[in-house]
Length: 105
Image 1 (cartoon, rainbow, N blue to C red):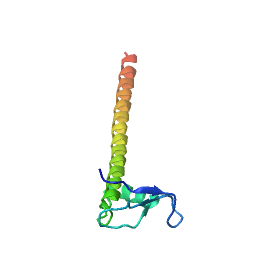
Image 2 (cartoon, rainbow, N blue to C red; image 1 turned 90 degrees about the vertical axis):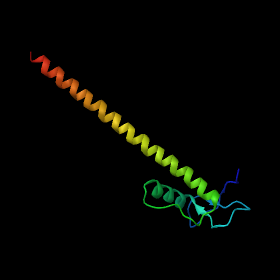
Image 3 (cartoon, rainbow, N blue to C red; image 1 turned 30 degrees about the vertical axis):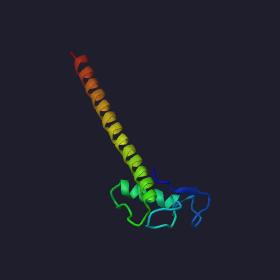
Image 4 (cartoon, rainbow, N blue to C red; image 1 turned 90 degrees about the horizontal axis):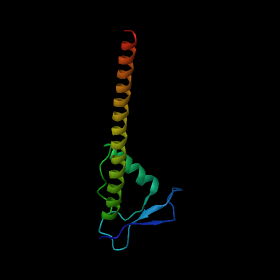
C-alpha cells in the first residue's frame, strides 16, 4: 500500500495543517496543499465544478478522491432524506384531506 501524505503542524499562508508529499513520492507536484485548499478542491470536484488536478502526487489524489467520495455520499444521503421527508409530508397531507372529507359525511 502506498504511503499517505503526512499531516504536519505547519501552515501555509496562515491556513491550517498542510498535506505534505511523503518521502519517495512519485513524480508530480511535491508542494504541500493546505487543508483549506484541499477542502475547496474536494467541494468543487464533488459539485462537478472542477477536475482532479493532474500535478498532485498519487497519494494526494488518493486522499482527495476519498474526500470527494465522502462528500458525494453525504449529498446523496441528503437528497434521499429530502425525498423521504417530502413523501411522508405528502402522505400526511393526503391522510388529513381524507379525514377532513370523511368528517363532513
